[in-house]
Image (cartoon, rainbow, N blue to C red; front, side, top):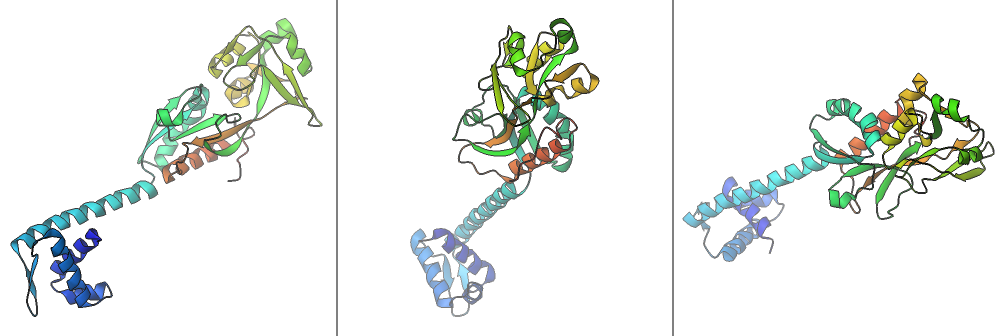
Length: 308
């Protein structure tokens, strides 16, 4: 028995005043509608309508039941509207995770423009250079660079992040300039531990032949901000995404070296919780920032938007 359907028919009968009008709306017979109301009465165990040849009236129990049915149906309709809005309206809270430097440099400065486009959105931004368990942390979407370690994750690749060998002029004046990747083995290389094989730096020659060197260091960190500061202080050489040093490179504070050897690019992905279909608010957020990144002077050459 579809009790909800019977309640809807009962409410329509009461509000239209007759069975025939409801039958026409439902494309059925007056007799079929009458039998459905009788089935509802049998289910609740009381008489709801007193029928006459041309009309019907509510019993006292029927009047009370009608009011409750109206409340139930209105509540269900409100729930349907709210769920529909949540699914198809860009609004509500979105929990986002990103590496610290990436969030500080490339996400937070764009939030004002994002809110101007989507004023009903709220962002909870978690910045962490270490691995974040999306499910345990309740994260809806995260930006991740490098090859993904967890095959269970649902990922959308939005581009590739260019890297370079970056060093300060002060370090070069004291230690000389490496001419080949092999020369790096004789220099102090600052290591970012947030990626796999962080002490193995891979390059591609003009013929796209890969060359990998294992480098050493007296300083390593899981913070790209700390590595950047170490480079600025002249502690050593880094192998890093160029966007972290955009202003530094433009101002000449640091420089990229080994121009004839192209470092391997890092995949840039947006990652969702396993088995969770991206909602319209997630897609709107990702599309907004992908578009914004492609127009950034520090990212326009470093990120190649992927076809999705």
